[in-house]
Length: 84
Image (cartoon, rainbow, N blue to C red; front, side, top):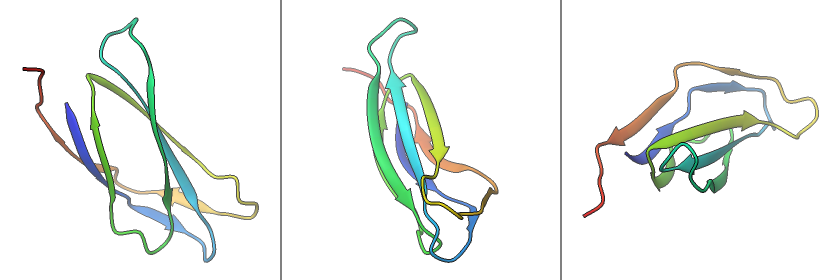
């Protein structure tokens, strides 16, 4: 798959930040590649990830104290991709 962008739907308090990290791999026992961190603030429109893999794990976290956030609908632009 080709994961082009993520459109975050977060409710974040003023001054807060949320971080997205991605772990990607092509096979169940394959090598894990990491992409990110991508920082999401209340004004973030979208995140360009440009990631290619067969499996993806997305971790959402924050390390800023006092940050309150809530996840809405998680939207991604994903298309079929393959090796030539």
